[in-house]
Length: 130
Image (tube, rainbow, N blue to C red):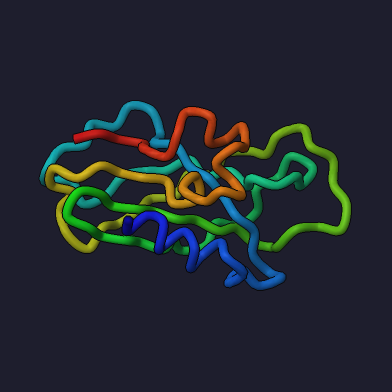
């Protein structure tokens, strides 16, 4: 599956010391349709970081026939020690290279076995069904 391939590329050891895995949700109040080419994601660092998500990096996009997989990372990377009060959600406008069409929107981080069991992925990886 496209999502698994993209997730493995981003999460499977390709993160440098300056990046950490992040999950996302759709910001409330959006109406996405087949012609949509942008949406706002609320991005949250998955690992502990004293309540701070950090800077959101440009997402990886996997465009398939049935799904658009969006995979975020944040910077800086994981601190040596941090408390876990829950990190803030940072808005990020995603621009797609083509209209969404009838595809689902999927959080690539939640497709990874390392992140799928986290609280941020409790609702699953699909963020929007057509």
